[in-house]
Amino acid sequence: MIETFEVQTLLYGGLSKHPYARCLAIKFSDDPKQACAWLESIEDQITFGDQPPADKVLIFALTADGLKRLGLPSDVGDSFPTAFRLGMGSPGRANLLADTGDDKAGTWLWGGPEKAIDATLLLYADSQTTLVSYASELSSGIDAAGGKVLHQVTPTPLPKPRPGETAAQMVREPFGFADGISQPIIKGTRRWMRQSDAIHAVEPGEFLLGYPDTRGFFPPSPQVPAAMDPDNLLPLADPKHSRGAFQPDFATSGAAAARDLGRNGTFLVIRQLAQYVDDFNDYVDDAAKRYSGHPAVPDQLDPELLPEWIGAKMVGRWKDGSSLVRYPHGPATRKHEGAAFRPDNDFLPGAEDPLGERCPFGAHIRRSNPRDSLAPGSKDELSIVNRHRILRVGRGFDAVGGSDPEEQKPGLLFMCLNADIERQFEFVQHLGHSLAVPRIGKRSRPDHRSWGRHGAADDPIGARPAEPDGDKGLRPYARGSLPLHAEQECDSVSRPDRECSRR
Ligand code: HEM
Image 1: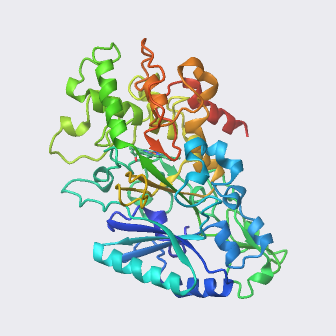
Image 2 (image 1 turned 45 degrees about the horizontal axis):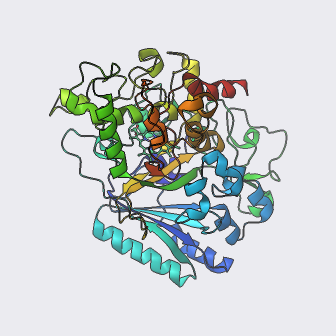
């Protein structure tokens, strides 16, 4: 059973009832005592549990640097997983995450070795006034404690849902697509009790440290020696003594055993991604002209919808969130205008669209979560693929909200939670970038980007057009590294799962 009130509220959803949000990226004072005193001063405000207060919510996350600055001994720091310790801006991870060229860490607005941060505060509020006054109160506290707010992102306020509309349907990212629809459902949460959709259900250990994952193992969690926990606040790190599927071991004492510092925690990945909306729209308009009359375009498609259809082929869903697998010829809301509609998410692309004729293999959603693509309808494949799920809790921002004085671009404050950064976030990100390379040959290039001109220009709809595009575009539509959307090769989808099942 999940210790619900020990877990920060963000794990239970993207806080759609708190439309106003801000992310503060902060640096602590160099004096650990001052930094710890500040943290103690805000400790009571951090929001735990699945029933957050209606007015405001505070989520707090530390980086490896932040833990050091608070005085965590280096041997304890070393027990954190490598991806967290190194951070995504470390040179060793740049190739894996495709943070190279224009996207290399040195160009980031914040984070990475040059603009390292110690912690982030995520503020959510029911009104603009509450958000602004809370943010200013917290910022003053940080200044007074010798710290600094290095960067802030203010997502676009969420629109109020119209009657019959779900939160997932009303939240649109800057390209105009409904976002936040397909999420894993953690067993034991309220959401699971309401909607225990078998194809998305996962064990708590996929997202929470200290709980068994889908294979019955505990995700890697940092540990501290017993001497550092004199009041016995932390559970024992060895599940035999404290909890888990095993019987407690009464034969030996756990008094001196290491303690689990991570229990009820999770890893939050944040990436601020700029989106080139005009370029994206120009591309789909241009591609629509080129594809008009192409045999791959279904006869049933209203010609007016051709540009949206091209975009939908890149994402795998129409702008209203309906899937291409189930609605190949037009968005669901167009068909049933005015009727209440919840974007569908129980489709199985392997069983329903095995050749990728509706939703290309390279579409963003099929690549990020292939479901049963390799073995149509297979429960085994779903359970393997579900080992790589992430819980997305990001929000879009407009040209000003990203606080980038030079670019002034809208974008996505991509945020996701996972228990194992390497197996989950990094895997999905990596899946999007590198796996296509060995098979793409002349039709693409290794710097192929998701939402990118390279990928999309080659074959956005998975139709293998006769007419090659040449070197038309050089810039991707979104910067900051995303999974690839527009390349189509069956094998590139299946390879990661084969690798995974061999482990
Ligand atoms: C600007 C960047 C991005 C945009 C505009 C974008 C947009 C979208 C959209 C429109 C959907 C479909 C709606 C939904 O199911 O929520 C989606 C789904 C998804 N995205 Fe992204 N995304 C971006 C970046 C990323 C990144 C960086 C990752 C992970 C590394 C990612 C992983 C996913 C996953 C896992 C899904 C759900 C797939 C499924 O289960 O069907 N996205 N995204």
